[in-house]
Length: 513
Image (cartoon, rainbow, N blue to C red; front, side, top):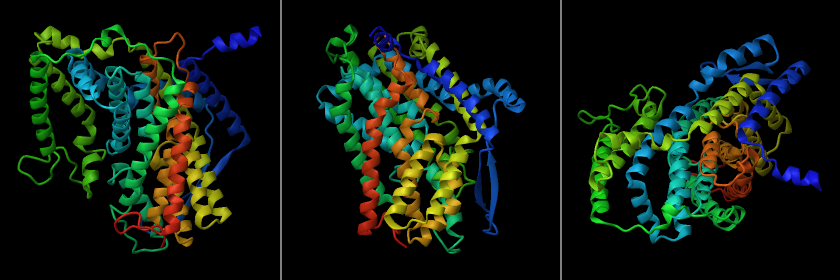
């Protein structure tokens, strides 16, 4: 009886969990390396369209080279960890908006007369469709969603969890081709040309099925949040500072007008700079690329490299001009104080990010993830399934593979060379095969701490945790399980129904050859 009571009071902090995962990764890599675990990865030569193979082996972290990697790269990996810099920069902009009063005024007005379900749906829908921004959507949507619920006098946990569910379950969904899709398409085309040298991929070939999937998941995630999640969370006590109803005065109205005009001017200028071919415009694009989406989001694009800063400056402008109009910012000291407002108490989050970056980099070094994906790929080809069983198999394989290799491109480079010809021989188009793969990713993207931006989710839960116990890593995963199961089921059923009926998945895109 006493032992059970002790267990109930022990909650492992996410930082301690990550330390344990790091230790297990080191030990497990040595054990698998000793067993000689390996797998073949097949590649296609882009010019000759001939196959070659590469033997993937587990890299032991208990070896001399592994230990050298641990001690020599840990600091560098932390400094180069994208979520770290992105979060700090975005929080500067959010801090200005929050400290100046812009967020409290605008979000209170936004949520005051709107139904709770409607607010949740809009946040979830925005999170799902924000995939066009890539991974940067995590550092923007999760903090903002928490504040929307906070100023709507609801538990910020709801916003954090629902937004993360929308971002992860919708990670493979988009109305238009994203930069990730563009990279995947190149790999898909290469695999398809092994059997059909004239194959062409239409950029809007799966817009129909994506539209239906986005709508269904937005409704499903909203329903799960309002009907299941809220009942699992502790009762939220509204802080005294937020209990008082907002009274719109002339100062607040003037602040909103100032910030609205300044924000609009900034947006117009920004949009003009991503329009190609206009006088003095289009300066943020990478003109070495063919597709517009690649010009916008390629690695060499000014837009892509500076997008976090662009968004941060937009937030700063909104907060600053609101503060000027509402007279909450009266001098340069007031403005400087707003810049660091959201960074107060961020120390624990930085430690969390440090151990998360270490865990992810060490796991990648071991090669365990790619070996699992390559083994699953070989399994699909050996089973020789066709039709619906083949669709279900790829969906499951994509879901499982995502837990160990969250990166879409890294998985698809391993899967596509053999799976695209396999599916074409089974009468399934390369476009639909890529959709199956992307939908499978959506089911489990929110269940893997190896996804770099999972740490943002953990950090925000920790920031708004008002209880005595920390939110453990396993509890944060537990919140996402209903979303994963239900959304995964919806997407799989959607794929099967679409395949059976034979509907076009988009313009010039079909499921059956």
